[in-house]
Amino acid sequence: MCYLICRNGLLETDRAGFEENANAIGIFDEEEWTKELKIKEEFSLSQNEERVFFCKLEAHPSHLFGVFHIPIKKKEKQSHDFAVYILKERLIFVEEDRFVSRIASILQRRASKEAYTTNHFLCDFFMELIEDDILYLAGVEREIADMEEMVLSGDQLHFNFHMLGTKKEISRLYCYYCQMMDIGKRLLGQNPGFSAFCDRADRLKQEAQSLREYAMQVQDVYQAEISIHQNDVMKLLTIVTTIFLPLTLVAGWYGMNFYNMPELRFRYGYPVVSAISILIVIVSLWFFKKKKFF
Image 1 (tube, rainbow, N blue to C red):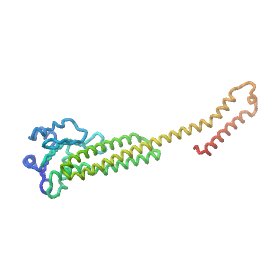
Image 2 (image 1 turned 180 degrees about the horizontal axis):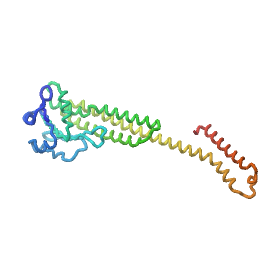
Image 3 (image 1 turned 135 degrees about the vertical axis):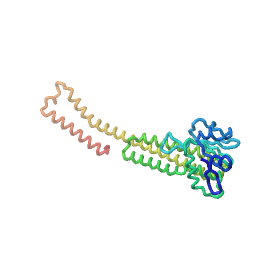
Image 4 (image 1 turned 60 degrees about the vertical axis):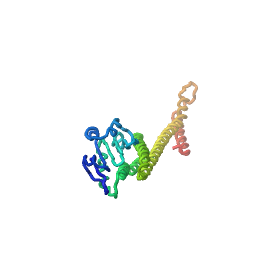
């Protein structure tokens, strides 16, 4: 897919139109780029033979070369990968899927500026990459808030599993925004129009950092709730142990069975000891209740 940049926007063209005109945008897949398009050797895709896992932009004498790894939301190991060559009056994209083509189609419908240029397209393209990210981060924040409410309400089932996935997603986006900020600053030196993109990428990075801190706080709340629960269990065990300790003493005392123990022949010995044991339990419970141990 190829476009010509005309005065009022983008005009779709063919391969010949792209090769013959300046102010053009070419979008190719890897097969077209390496086998069909007749281009200079300095633009060989061999600069990026290995699969990329980051975004970067390199400066060359005649052009800028960038590789991009755009994470797909909620899909940890999936991304949109493409490369771009930025020349003075021409842009060349090489992609694995139709991600760049879809964005170009969106920008074609929007482009209505007078004297539309490659710089305008490049600014609009990068803004489209992070267009809806603030809404997605707001959704992630709501998910963390829901997990916090679940923890405080006592529903802690699978909390660690969900929180781990959320933290990994936030970390992935934070690294992505940091890389996009670096790219934006590099392009800002050549195109002042990238100031808006840098500002938005910086806000997204700060929002992602805030979400990382929020997630850590919620995890601390979870650990605190676990500790409180463990303390409650230990308190219960302590109360039970304290109540039965004097009963154990009574049982051990009268279990010695010495011959001269007068209580062994006492007619009402068993009922009396039973009554004393029940009284001990009642007094112990009353004491713990008065001290608000439970």
